[in-house]
Image (cartoon, rainbow, N blue to C red; front, side, top):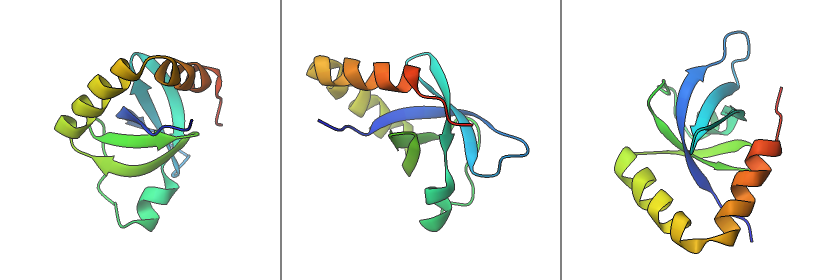
Length: 93
């Protein structure tokens, strides 16, 4: 099962215009944000929320949607735990 998980942008990475540091449940990883520009998102900044799948931000979402998704994902159990493990093991540079 593949999930998109919400993450909060911590910083836009200087020198890497397509990367942002994103926090998901305390795990911080670099995420590719290039697809957001393709969707017309040009105002991404720290504190914003994005939906992430396999290291790519697919869309910008609001905080209420992010919190609702996190609550639902926590209830899913194993699939969410597996996705968090995959995020923790990822390394985009």
